[in-house]
Image: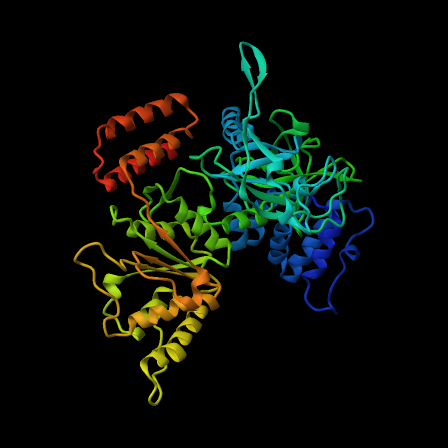
Length: 603
């Protein structure tokens, strides 16, 4: 045991049992393993016993692995990392140290006040059947995170959700309140009148609710994390950015702040520390004061990043302690939702250059996209432009590519102007390349006297779909075919004598048998293939006018919290667009809207 071993031992805080189990598990060979308790000597303090374990690992050449696993299992505080770097020079430890911020807003009054004001707009109160049920927080534009047992608990009334039959839940029993705060007016404390929001028709995004006792949480036997994600019928803060989530477990003794609505009161906050961690299933204990009704509240670290969802009081624990669900699974569930899952407007998206693009009068397209991401019955879409507005196809393709996360979706866009002269095999090879298959090999050639149609149906298309299935890496494949019917003389029919049209028709039919395939036809004129008609939808783009852009921006301005700035922006926009004729350049109108959206988001 050396002074260096003692310096490591001083940062171990999570008790000896987990430490001893990790010490034993990391040793190689059953015959040479040393039990942790055999290293101690009479009269050793806890710190000395721990230090002897580090000394044994150092002598055995596995100190770096031991230190790394102590950090991963959160058996140590953050100070351990800095000391371990000096002693092991572990690259992993250096990377972990780089993620730790040295400055804490909790130690700076001005930053702390600004952080509180920022996150307070996102916190909400949830009522079920007119009774306060819990706290939640907004994931813009319209999702709310809370504790799962807020929806499934029967402590005060019948539960909203029966786990065995979640589809039977009645969303009209729920009201979500934002801005339920206390302000100072004329030297008096006055509680604001909160804003009310109902749930959307398709309101339940995710639910994980282990069994919880009415009076609190049993320390042992809690299986899984406790959280729910629900969707509102409209956006409380349309132009708000998402709060940052730190999807890694905090460390013991870290600061923690919880914004909450205890027992239905106006919003308040309490501060404490992380007191213990359950690495599996991703839970942590903390010392922040709470009361019934605080369940679902966001737990913030020193930089006001969400690290957890408050669950409730631990039963039979001394000293008293609360439990929270780490944010990792919640963050993963949110990341899997495409941005189009919002049910409110104004909609917008950022194009490939990072420029904001307004989505005006395209609710039906977004609704289909939402269904296509979550409902297996929506696999194909035909979009036709209106007679008076033959444009909009390229915008639609950009919209789909921007709103489908590449981690879950492979979006392939192909223009008819580029592919109309390709043969069936050349098109198939280009499609495979665009889907991620580098240098695809040629397809199996036709055998004997096989007809062209029989070759496509029995050989080429099945082989193409099998290769796509391999190349997609568990992602959905979206094929966007653009310019299928151009409104001017530049239109070129597809597949004139090269079997391309026949190949595409077979792909349209294939939607019925491939759950991972989606096809969007832009500017298409025709009927859905009979063999897969149940999987296809049709849309006609509505006429778009300058007045519709003005209505869109009025809704967008209403989401700016600062009244003076909101008024100034609205007046400036009306000045720039005043007197626009009905034949105004819609591209310029959209560009103007995008500039204002970027301006609002920079607040």
